[in-house]
Length: 338
Ligand code: AHG
Ligand code: MN
Ligand code: MN
Ligand code: MN
Image: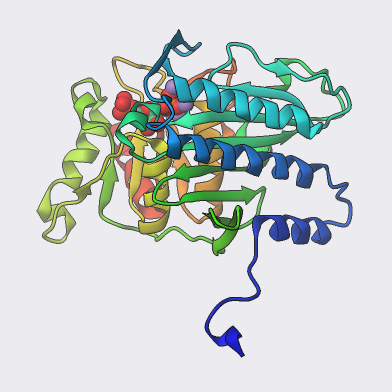
């Protein structure tokens, strides 16, 4: 039979979600439907990114978002695609997006989910064809929720699911559910399906790779300076310094870190005392993925990242995430300097 050559029993994301739902006897199917809408948004965004230079989708939109970033055309389009998908799912009541000043309240008062998203992460890389992605998190609203943006000011520990896509050589989707494994899917363009290619992803316990924008080192606090110095010291690392890798798209740097191990950091510093990356739709979802894959994620105060509660929907934080031992080194150096 031909089955010895090719896999005739492929697990698509659609199948994966159906099987997940079947394992949860109490499930209503709402979460599954929401994820179907999500995956359609990802496919559309992947499609437009791939065609961007051909259809006049490079460059700036001419507007600035709430967190001060110049919006690219694809930031705006991806945001619109994401919002339309969430609205039409009928299962989402609230949506917070990097590209929207206020939380969006959908006209679905009975919907039980709230979604956070960074429609395009790494948008400064778009026009160079360098990998970018989409980050998402899903919260379940409590019965007491009133459907206002305050319902979104929750710690990452309450995320029911989170993950990200990376639009690279292939479009990859990494997703995890609360207390669950991390699973990686690859978009097969011909089939139009995300295929489970990386089941139960586990981040290596240690690896000598660091990923940080070292151009900011003049603004860093002492423990961060000491930490990066120690990574570059061959004597302190068995004769070889760490390798530096920095793409400038958190999703791409995080995805590499998840597969190869190492650490990604965007610390708070003297110029940006609250850090750069945003808690709700960048830090918390990534932290849940890394913890569920066996790594760690902490903020610049060395608190577990997913315990941090934002005061405003666009609040920022410093972040260190990666291999368990690599993040532990950061924590230990900060303790020593405290
Ligand atoms: P976004 O494109 O969603 O605004 O996010 C940009 C973020 C993140 O992707 C990346 O890790 C970081 O900004 C890069 O910042 P620097 O250019 O300051 O290194
Ligand atoms: Mn931005
Ligand atoms: Mn981002
Ligand atoms: Mn973005």
